[in-house]
Length: 420
Ligand code: DGY
Image 1 (cartoon, rainbow, N blue to C red):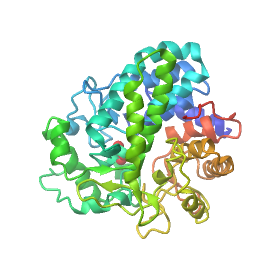
Image 2 (cartoon, rainbow, N blue to C red):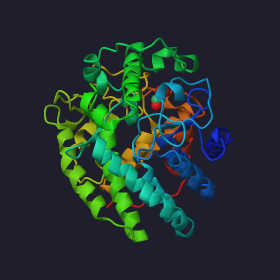
Image 3 (cartoon, helix red, strand yellow):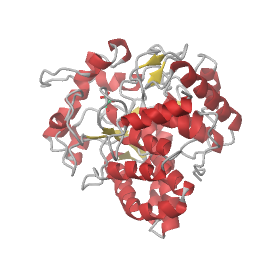
């Protein structure tokens, strides 16, 4: 089987009818940004299915605008923490936190691929995207830098960015629990028990408040401004603005958000290391970690080349790029989830940005490197940067989707329009 055929078979195998699971067993539900990647993968051969994926995701939107990070359409005991632990309050059983808002950006790609088909879907989706983005600004915005109330919200669960804020949390009152992830994946490739205790402590805090965002914002020990959220939301707002103009929808509010985040993103610049990193709002401390998310300012449409020297330095440190943590950082662990491994979908976002910012050579190199990575390690969840060996889950939706939509040598240049 060719890699293209294998990737399509993975999408088909993970399709549960209207939504796609990231991979069976380890992640048996609909995850927010995984689903958006699934949609662009489907779009290569089935555009109607791509739109259905997005619409199922938004069927779980909460009345306050939040689009959850997990939708539990059908209970599956192979995953923990499930719907009871979360106690989500939306129309579909769900988690109580969100995930990086890449939907507007890839909805715009789908629309550009087939405007006639897209126009009908846009009408319903634009107000939903607006409500979601407004929720981020209202509850996660700190002067235009976008925060998270839980590490899972960034998708970068156990990055060393959280080490300092986590050290300040005493996970008291967490009931006994049994992890399921380590029955699917070896322990060394997953977060430690120390991290899980704190993940569950933060879930409990949110659930017990009835997911009252004002309360969480006031009392949670974990409130960290993060480059993934800040840069994906900035980019998403630019794309929502373009879509709204197209559809004759209001734009003033979106223009304000863009200006606010453009200014606020500067708070993530850490002069001590000369890089974007995380900012702990509770302590005012930067994390001091260069992660793959530090390379998203180009994707956000910022014409800012201050990360370029770090990019080329890190590109030279391992055979496969971009490691999720700078290999020169003492916390780097090349196989442990977000503490070192390469993630193909992050590479796609970084390369989109590089390309648009006039660094087409670096974008092409990263695409080629990612294609070799997938050819070496298969459609894994993530990869060891030293040799491309697979880690985490297998038959992974977003790796297959990113192959089809971007990395495969048979893929034409991306149809995603530039952000600005
Ligand atoms: C997990 O369970 O590992 C997920 O990353 C949470 O979203």
